[in-house]
Length: 88
Image (cartoon, rainbow, N blue to C red; front, top):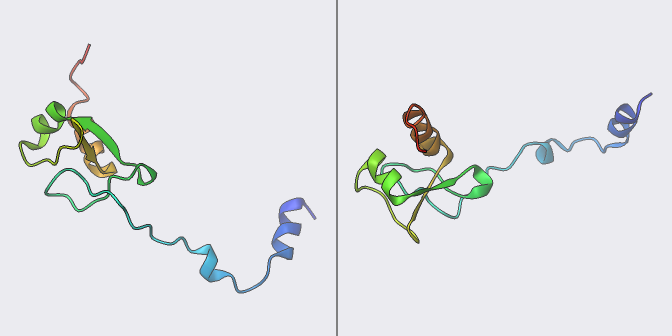
């Protein structure tokens, strides 16, 4: 019997409620006005410069300290659209 099997054997039964991950509630909304996601760093949120965000989504962004906080899905779409451009 290995250490993992021994650890599983010693766990109390009926902890199905603890195994399921709780859905985290975000604190900071996405800066793109048409998006309902959360821009928290624990949920994969990032920040973009105002010029990059306005190039992608126009003026419909919420600016905070010269940055726009975006959720993970919005960041991925921005990243895919700007993949071909050179920013050197």
